[in-house]
Each structure stands twice: as structure tokens, then as C-alpha cells.
Length: 347
Image (cartoon, rainbow, N blue to C red; front, top):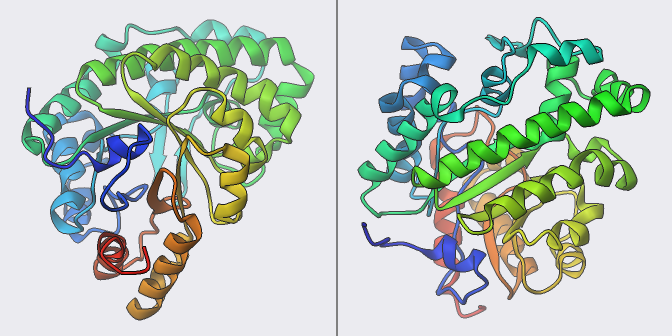
């Protein structure tokens, strides 16, 4: 087994002291990199996901070009509904489209908890290949969508700012909603266990639409299922929960036993730390749009963010995915400022 040359991320997640703050960026393997765009012009979205050599190449690009402290496998959260039997299309300039969404209890009959080795084996193969090609340079992160976020797409059939149809489905057909959430959860547990077995050191659960729910509903429709996933993975991989906008439940998320909690830019780091407690690693929370600022401003703002997080286990990241129009040298400035911060007298 290859020894990791840079294990900063893993040590931060375990709550150990690190000589500097580890840094990576959500959506770092993707559309802001010119080399990624060349592959995008050549291959369709799902081709890039399903061909392990392409996914591995894309995963490693930001390690080489931006200098991040971790690689995150190139894939998509919607490969899970796809594996469960739903058609998923990626429509240019429109995003995901599921032509036959779930509307009633009888629609669940077309879904299955799949054999993940069969239906998602290409992700595991991409992880194994990436792990081999990284050769211990940095840890490898796997991921899946949280059950609530996947339900949003599976019921709505497409992206939405509010997911009113998904919420109405949960409020008017709660029994069916919980059956669907459990099917997604069972699939996700098997999927993430497969990722850990294939070489993922860390797995992140993306609850992109968690913040659309109030605290009580977040517990009922989201956290209840995330808790099952974190518990099932505890022997196999370090876990991070990123529930965008659901800062009000940081205390409850910390109680799941997850090693890290991602936060967006709408909460002050000191309040996040107060809610999450001293032991869990916080991850975030730079506004991705700020990467469009001039480089000297990015450096100043990144240092201010690092000052605000202070001591305690911490991973520098964005508060959501990197935007496609961010110049590569701006992304690099973000990463380099974090890397240089530890050597400044202020820390």
C-alpha cells in the first residue's frame, strides 16, 4: 500500500494538529480548467463519468495545475438515481433532466436498490485508477448526494431554486417520501462502501438543497437518513457532511459522528464553531464568486477567512462549487494563500 506523502486533510479530519491548513475546492475537477473543457468538447457528460481513464485524468488535473491537498473523484450525484433505474439526461445550458419523475407510490415500483458493483462499477474503477496514478501524492475523496437532495431531483425532474414539487410530495405523501428516501439511503450506503473499498480515503455527502428545509423538516427528511450513512461508513472512511444553507443544524450534524462539516459563506466561522463544538473539523467557507476579484483582494479575503476560523480542526474550501468563469490563476491564488498562511507570524 502506497504511503501518503501529504496527509494533511486526513489529519485535520481526525482532529490532529497540522503544520498548515489543508485546502481543496468543491467542483475543482471541472469546467474552469481549459484542459477539462477540451475533454468536454470531445466526450459527453456521462462518457466522461463512465470511462474510468477519463474520470481519473479529470480528477488529477487540479492536483497538477492548482496544487490542492486532495483529489475528489470526477462524477455526479445523479449517477445514483440512474443506477436505481431512472433516466437522467444532462442538457447543455439547462442542467439535469429526469424525463419520468416520481409522482406517486406506484412510481417506486420502477426503482431498485441496485447491485452497485454492476451498475456503478465504473466509479469504483475510476477510483482505483486515480489512486494508482496519484501514487500517494494526496488523499482521494469520494462522494454521493444526500438522500433529500436526490429526492429533490427525482421528484421535480430537473433543477429548481425552491423544489416546491419535491417539498409538496414530502408533505402530501410522507409515507411514499420516506420509502423513497430509504431506497436512496440503502443504495448510497452500498455505493459509498464500494468507493471506500476502491480507495477513497474520505467520503463527502453533498446535501445541496438541505437549506430549503426548516430545522424540524431537515431532521425528518434529511438528517435522519444522513445519520444512517455516516454510521454505516464509520469503520471504512472518514466522512464530511456538506448541507448547504442548513447551518442551523450544525450541532445535530456534529452529533452524527461525521469527521468534518462543510459550511457556506452565510455563517460566520466563529458561530459555526460554537454550534459544531471544538472537535469536528469545519470546512469552507469562501464565497466562490469572490474568486472573480483581483488576485490581491483574493489573498486579503482568504487571510481574513483563515484568521476567522483560527485554531481548531479546519479545512480551507469554498462555500459551494467553483464557478466555471473563474480564471485558473485566481483558483491557484486561493490555494497558495492558504498554503503560505501557516508560515506567517500571525498564526
